[in-house]
Image 1: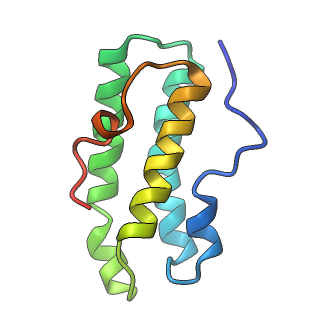
Image 2: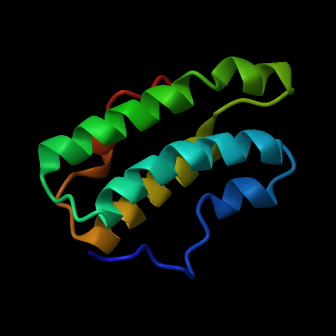
Length: 108
């Protein structure tokens, strides 16, 4: 079992931008943490990983209204930041899933 990179700051670009409320970025991060926990447990089956990714992305989708209510939205910068974070997670753990496939359930 491999631990996730302790030096990598998940969603750092979103945290650095005041447009995104930190408490909502925390919620996006929580969804991605679920994928990391699965991978840290040693799971390597791409179907199981994709299923967890789908759940995480749907969880992020569900946050869109909260972003709107806080004068923000999951738009270009956020999309690219989330996609880059997912790509890094998959690369770190050596999971051969394309980033676009990994976030296929996105509504953003």
